[in-house]
Length: 187
Image 1: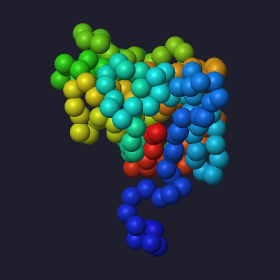
Image 2: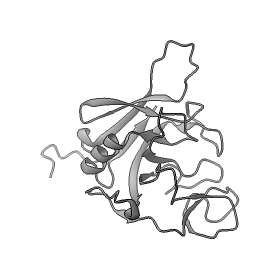
Image 3: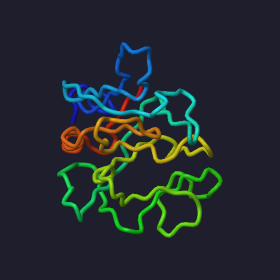
Image 4: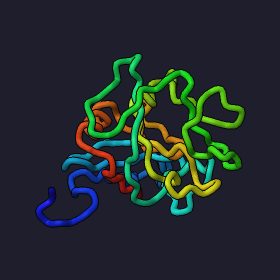
């Protein structure tokens, strides 16, 4: 119990992500800096940077502060990390709907699924550990973005489609320290 009586996340479990200052005329909009637990690391954000008006398919990371809801891990790759977050083992039939006109838009779905969707069991390892953000999830609006996750990065940190991507050691640290309701501040 907090001695201050303050509600909400503790200061030490807010993950902050900002655009990395670059001296190349802004050509690398997707380069970010994550600050957490008193340390900083590189990360990748949307290939088109941040946006205050997130739209499906714009390649932007939405500006705002969002709670972490739950996560997934690849049990078949031994990627479970001790965490206070609710984490589900990814199954071969797990998907995530990204079709704005579908009733299951921005929701987990069971595969096969007939409309556009993400595969959760990816071959590239990006979703070996993945956290779902409450960005357009609890108060869902058609076309305001789907599958905005906190996940592992590709080598070299190329831009994402709107997610935040971090190196595996950073992912492990975040998973070990946050809990349901911990927040990420984007932008």
